[in-house]
Image (cartoon, rainbow, N blue to C red; front, side, top):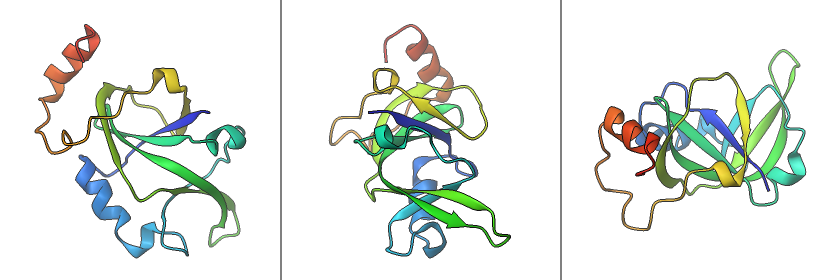
Length: 140
């Protein structure tokens, strides 16, 4: 199994992603949340074997969604793209620093941040600088 990591462009917090995915524009024809990207993952079989898309907000991974399938999407100009269809459940993760990058990247399960325990999702988050410092020294 392998995962993807992607910047959540235009969103500053997880609630922004939740709100966006509730719109019809962000959904596939069958109502699942979908993120469309230009490149098709070469490791498709590994992704579809339980992989997730980890979302980065302001330099930190904060949540993930399980990848259900990859759909071919044709843009208005005829260009074929990849629609990453996601489970509706957004799972909060322990914050993990991630430097800026373009597109998406593969993320090994061993490098992925752990999920937050049930009930901790609503806890206030630490200031970003403190959170990063604690993660760098291995406390978080």
